[in-house]
Structure formats: structure tokens, C-alpha cells
Image 1 (tube, rainbow, N blue to C red):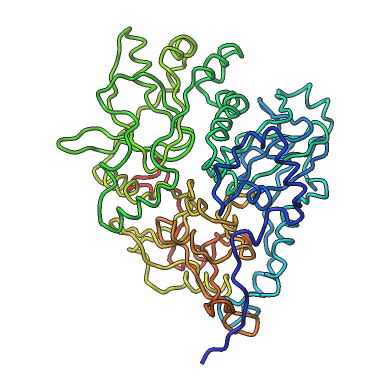
Image 2 (tube, rainbow, N blue to C red; image 1 turned 90 degrees about the vertical axis):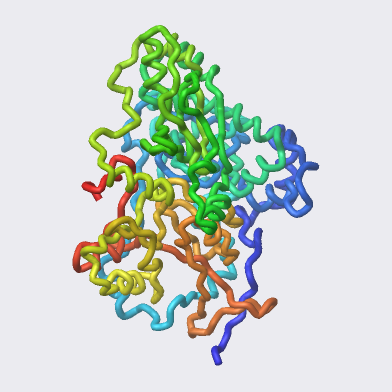
Length: 562
């Protein structure tokens, strides 16, 4: 009979964002105009606004020059400026200015030592660390309410920077970071403190709840985006990069915000998969073949399928993701010919799409007269074979287009030796973090291993933010200390790539919640061996080069390139 150890099961707000947040702090926040505008009465008793402020926000102080967010970093929070001024870079600046951090890697000795230091019992944890996890989580964030931000990277010689590089001022009341927090994408700009500043940082779980229950706050986010981020986004888009400030402002004012599908698209997708249905025909339409093209669609987040009628069905031409656009070719050809043009293909949302629509007349007035035709790329890739078409349909239908690090096995090379599985287990405390089986196409198999998705829907429902993007590299990782074992991420993953495991104490006892007598579970998944030199152990261990981690980008989705 197995022996057990006892540990109380953690709850939703056991790990507040700032353990030092006081009730008086919450009351002060409620008097701020940015917060008092939120209708507290619209929140349910189970998720009161005061509770969200107490547990899902923290007060952060930044010194002059401290970098608040950096372009390219992954973030899970938004900010409201309570005091002071910030600056956002709106033009080019040297990368060295940001002082990029590098991931902390194990040394060679530490890596080799795993062979004899690993516990023979799998999933052993030092349970003593969980008791004070909230305080340590705050320290890891490096931003205590009582202290300055502790930023190790800062902009030196602020007056010189302001004179030399293009920046825009952000003052009290401004909200930023919401697109990265809610869209699960990298930060789109670098923002630093011009003088001493105090910010309210809202982790995305709290931001999600506020948007959910308060329509005014949702509208404010859209307005803030138009004022503070849309111009930056347009400037960084090749199509609008050469416009002067006046023309760019006119484009921004005319741009429309549109969303299609559901933010938690994985729910309906999992139902379709379980019933054996195809997603084609169930995808929300964005633009239909044969209809008049009234504007350029620019994808901000999510994925969309570009398809053309083919016999009684349709043929997928490509798919679009963040940064791609739709309709430019037809709009430009129509403008040159002086006539209206209909769309040659359809666009549908693969689950969820957040898009910007720039009206045709705005493009005709400000963009097309100066457009370099080399910017127009046809939707259909040339010289595609039937095998390429079939592979693309497979990748889109299975949503593998979401993958940035899918584990792909060449079954013609694989001898089923399981060296990859053993290497993974040795690196992760005795249990492998993937299963060597999965969907197959011809002689390729996409295994059940975390793909570190472009759109990681596993992060949507996590109540504590335990599953998140690593700040360097953007890998999807799980903080074992703050994981409460709710299995939301495992249930949400459309690919079944997250496992819930029973953990054991240092003396190998099963850890049990005394209140329910049920084992404590923790979520586990592939972390790309991000702390190990040399990258994923599974790839390095394969003796026949049968295993690779691949990005299912459209340009590589051909039989010849895999």
C-alpha cells in the first residue's frame, strides 16, 4: 500500500500577483478615474472587482530610464500609468539599447550530473517550497510593490535618446500592453520611464475578467489602442512605412477593428475533433469569394484560411497569421484599372481572428500612388504539387500551423528505439514530457509534444498564470510553484500535449490534499529543455536523425522541404 504525504490543494487566488497589496491600496485604486469608470456592480459575487484588484494586479515603481516592456518580449500583463511619464520608441533604435537578457542555462557539469542526481522515483518535488510560493513568485518577477522595479536594463542618457530617436509620450491614465496580454503575442514596442513612474500592472487573467463584465472598459481598450498603438503598428507595416504623419493619422482614424470567431476557439474545435467533423464549413466567414473588395484586412492575431472554390468543394491556397494581409492584390488591380474588382478567394477564421480593416478609398488616396508592386504577394504558392496541397490541408485541418516547435518524426528513419523518450525522462525527473505517437501524414508523424504555439490557447483559462511565455525565446513553460493542478491548460490544449501527474515528496510519498484525500496534481509538458545547453534532449538523443523540431510555417509546408 502506497504511503502518502498531505498538502492542502491550492485555490484560485492563493498566489496573488502582489502578496503585499493591502485593502487600503485597493480602496485607493477604486478612487482613480481609470478604475472608478468601471462598473463594479456588473461583476458577480464570485469575481468582485475588489477581488480582481487585490489578487490580479500589483503596483510597480520605475526609475527614470527603466525599460517597462521591450519589443519582441512575451508578456502576460497590461499596464495603467498612475503617476509619471513614459516614452515609446516609434522609430528605429539600436538593439544594444535594450540589453537583451539570455536564458539561464545549466553548465556542462550540471547537465552531466543529472545522470546520477535524478531521483529514481519520478515526479519528486520539494513540497516545502509550495508553502511560500506567492512571496517567491513576487521575487521572481523582480517587481515588489514596496521597491523600485529592479529593472536590470535601462535607457541611459535620456535627453540624448530623446533627441536622437523618435519617441512618443505616454502620460497618466494611459493603458498599454493589452494586445500582447490578451492576444498572447510578443510586445510590439519598447516603452521606458522618462521620469519616476508608478504603474498598475494587471495580469491577463484579471484583464480578461474586467473586459468580460464591463463594456465601458472594453471600449476604452479599443480607444487606447487606436491612440497609442495603432500608429506604431502602421509605421512598422511596410505598406504604410513611407507615409508622412498627416497621411498616417488619416489612415489610423479610418481603420476599423474587427474580430471573428471565439477567443477560446479550442472549445468548439475539440468538439469537432471528437465527433470526427471537418472544421471547413464551420469557420466564421471574413470575406467571400466573388464579393466586392471594400478594404484591406490586416491580421493582428489568430489564423485565417484562404481558399478558392474548386469543383463542389474548395481548395486551400494558404493561411494567414499575425502580420499578414488579405485583399491587397485585388484592390491594387482594381485601382489601376479604374474599376471595381471582386475577391478571387474566400477568407475564413480558423477559430479566432483579430483584424484591422483599412477602407479602399484610404488606400487609393494615400498608399497606391506610391506603392512598390513588389510588396504584393500572390496568395497561391507557385509550383505546388498535389502532395503539397494535401500536406497543407492536413496542417491547416489539424491546426499544426499553430506550431513553432512541433516534434516531427520521419517514420522511414525511426527504428522505435525510444532513445528520445529516455533522454526526455532523464532531463525531467524520471517522466518523459511527450508521447511518441500522434497524427501522421504519409511517413511523417507529429507526436504528442508541446508545439509552443503561436497562439497558445492553453494559457486562456489558467487561473494563476502558471502557464506562460518565457520572457526570452517565447517558449510556453509552466511554473510548477504556482500551478494549482486545476487541469484547465490540459483540457484546453487542442493537441492533448499537456499531462497531469501525481507528485511525490522528497521521501517518495504521494502528495495528497488532506481536505479531499485526493492526490495533488501538477501540469507537465515539453519545455524545449530550455535550461539545458544544446536544446531539446530528444533531438540530440536520436541516433538516426529521425526527429526534428519544426515550425509549420507555410513556406516550409511542402513535401520536398520537410
